[in-house]
Image (cartoon, rainbow, N blue to C red; front, top):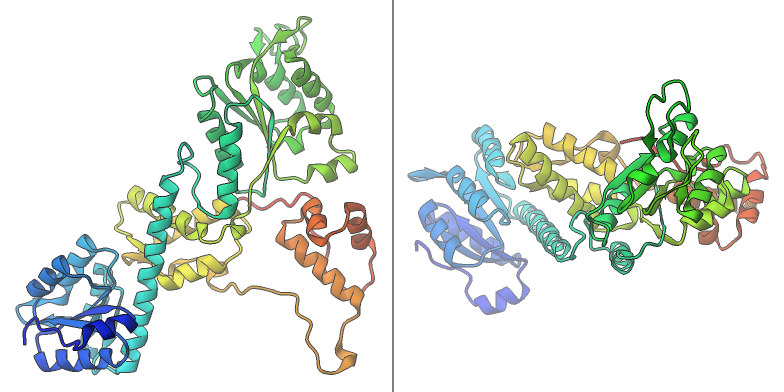
Length: 483
C-alpha cells in the first residue's frame, strides 16, 4: 500500500476538490483513514509512508498541501518540514502530533510548518485547519502574482503596487517624465511623495543632472531664503564667501520643494518671480543669475483652503501646479498593502539575517483591514517591528502592534425600532460629514467633492454648532504623526 493513491474516481473528485493533499504517515491503516475522511470532505488525496517517498512525490507530482505525522519510522516530520520550506516554500505543511509532543510541534512551526494538529484527529477540525492552510496558500500566490506584475512596470521599480490608483499614477508619470512642466504632488503624510519625485527625475531626460531636495517646513525663514536663492559675500554676518542657492545648484536637473504648503508667506513672492523669470537674485546681491531646473513640489496640506484663508498665494499655486499628481492613501490601494508588506518583510529579513519567509493568513487579513493613517511609512514601521519580534518562519498575528490586531472598522449606522430613538437629520448629517473628513485625513477640498457641495457650504456646516455632537472638526492640514 506504500505510495498508493486512495482517491478512487480521481477525475470526479478533483473537479470539486478543495485541493490535493499529500498524507505522510508510516501506518498504512491511518493513511487509509485520513484519506477516506478527507475525500469525504472534498479533498483529493495521495499518501506516502516515508520522508524519502514524500519528497520524491513532491518533486514529480502536483500538491496543494502536505499533512504529515511528526514521528515517522527512521525519520521525523521535521526533516520534511525543512525540505518543503527550502524547496517548495509556497506549499503549506500541517503536522500531526501526540499531546506529549507539543514542544516538538512548536519546533516544526519554527522549521516552516504552517500549523499542527494533535491526535487523535477529529476530521472536521482537520478540515478547518486544511481550509485555513489553503487560504494561506492562495494569499501567498496572490502576493507572488502581484509582485511579478509590479516588476513589469518599466522604469518605476521603486513604486510598488498594481491597484487601479497606482496604474493611473504610472500612466501620468510616463506621460510627463520628459516634460519640463512644474509638478505638484499632493497626498497624506507617508504616501511616498519624495519617492515619486525621485522616480520622475530618474526617468526624465534630466536624469544626468542633480536632484536637489529641500523641506520648506524644516528650515527657518531667514535661512530658507539664503538656501534657495544663495547669498553674496558680506550679505550678513557669517557670509564670508559667495554661495550659490539651491535653485542654481539644481540647474540641469530637478529641484524638489517638499512641504511647499508650509513655505513662509514672505518668501512666496520672491519664489514666484524666480520661477517666472528663471533667474534668481542672491541675498545681498544686485545681479540676476539664470538657472535651468525642473521644479517639483509636494504638500500634505489642502492648498486651496490655505489660499482662501490667506496663507498661500494663488498666483504661486498656479505656477507650481501645472501638472497635479494626487497620491492615493494606502487604504485606497487594496491588495497593494500585502505586496508592500511582502517587500518590506524581505527587506528587513535580509537586513536582520532572519529566515522570515512570509506573512500568516491571520496577520495578512489584519493588515488588509487596517486603514493605515500613517500610510506606507506606518506599514514599513509595522513590518520592521514584526520581523524584529517574530520567533517563527512567518509573521504571525501576535507580532503585529496592538492597534492593528485590535482594529475594527467604524461606520455611521442609523438603527432604531422606536421612532423617538431616531436622531435628528442635522445630527446624522454632521456625523456623516465628520466620517468623510476622517476618511480623507481632514482635506476639506476633497471632502467637499465627495459630499457634492462646495467648500464654503462645508465650512458653514462645520461652523454651525448644534450642541448635539461633541466631536471636534478635523484639522485643515490633515497632518499625520510620523511613523
